[in-house]
Image 1: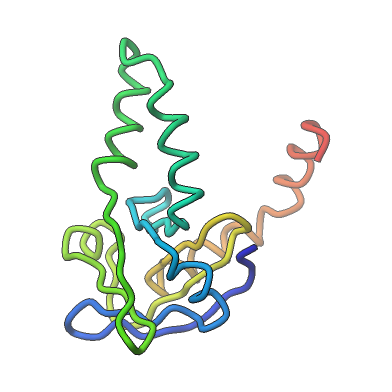
Image 2: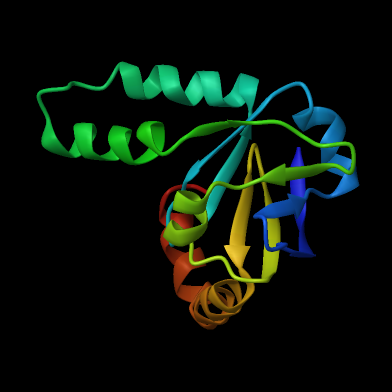
Amino acid sequence: MFIGEYNHTLDDKGRLAIPAKFRAILKKGAVVTKGLDNCLFLYTKEQWGKIAARFAALPISQAKSRAFARHLLAGAMDLEFDNQGRITLPEYLRQFSTLKKKVIIAGLYNHLEIWDEANWQAYKLETEKNSNAIAEELGDLGI
């Protein structure tokens, strides 16, 4: 399970250290892709396989299904770790997520999100401001 919020630095070559507590799980295989809200999603290979299978089952006749599958699947890349526990994020993913130097890695149970620090702070501020209304809506779903 991935939980927590971690501050890290992206170097000039696009390398990013992953928190040590997650490396053992991710070294078995990891995939990074374009996420939502201008962040990147990082999955274990096993979890990614489950998600990819669900997208493969969507009807290709529906434009929104095709568009979202393309967003996640075409933007995905297998990752390898170097000896220092770093991954290298390709330029197209760094541009998509507007990653600069300071990065937040956020654990969200079955995946990690990689955010530019300024984007994360703005998102978090807005979400926290609306947390009561969000909770109310989720309550209607039984959560």
